[in-house]
Image: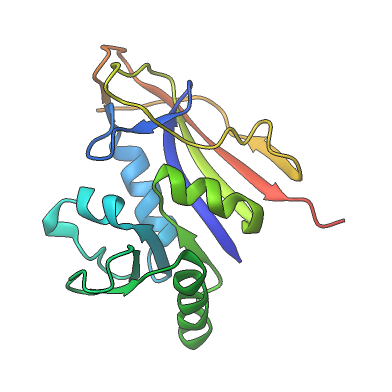
Length: 180
């Protein structure tokens, strides 16, 4: 299975390439539990946006996409094409018995992978984003060929938003590829 996973504001903003306009510990825990033990694929900018303490993402086989074949990503495997990265991650999944390869972004990578994704998991965060945040996720509500299931709105115990929403509400939305 090829899955994509991200968090976004209700307006579809996922970040600015370096940061996100929220802090949501519940989403971090959800992301970790969803991707642990699986191969993950991400673009160079997403790799570099990870806190160096968590790069490579522990417990996951990290695959990084960049045009620079000489790029150094200690602990990760560098690929110069998205198809090569997904194929290598798929082989790693088969070798380790993982059932999913997770695509972790960023925005350009997500848009390219929608057509091959079997599943998309989105944490929707009920907050806005300052103008500097201009990276958007694909709008899965209008992507053809997916069935959506939105979980209930939950309230974060410690989450914060740069635009001041308090308390921060969120929900997990699961989009599954129709296979009829």
